[in-house]
Length: 135
Figure 1: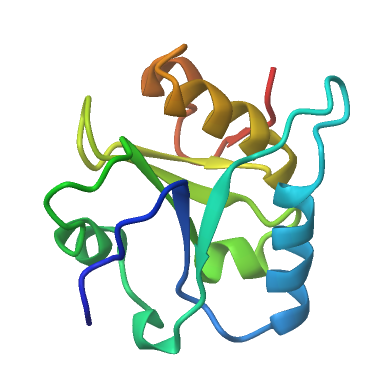
Figure 2: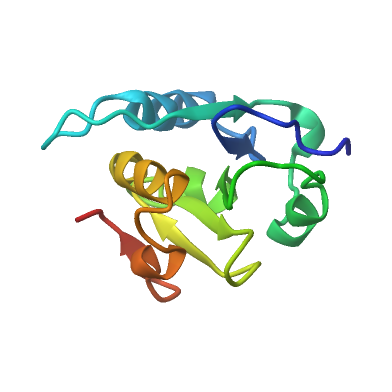
């Protein structure tokens, strides 16, 4: 696999290609304005089958030097099969590898706040088995 690209906006990596309809629905939900405030998530998408099945650790190893974001989001097999399609959000800065699941409609708040360092990764963190629904 190639290193992840340097992007202007936070990256969402697709690692599961079993259901295009779910991918499309997740992308639409993430790109839609938030319900309460109309905020948008500023994200770039990496939709490349070369990353199929890549685990969190593999993706972290592919983060290039100079990557300008403190976190990474992943649409993986859990995202595709679980109700609500929660994305995996991975910390690359404070506690590298710490991760949680977030509903697609929570990504706007997460991306906006983490990208400008308004909040810390741990402010959004929820235990395994739980899904961050936003504030």
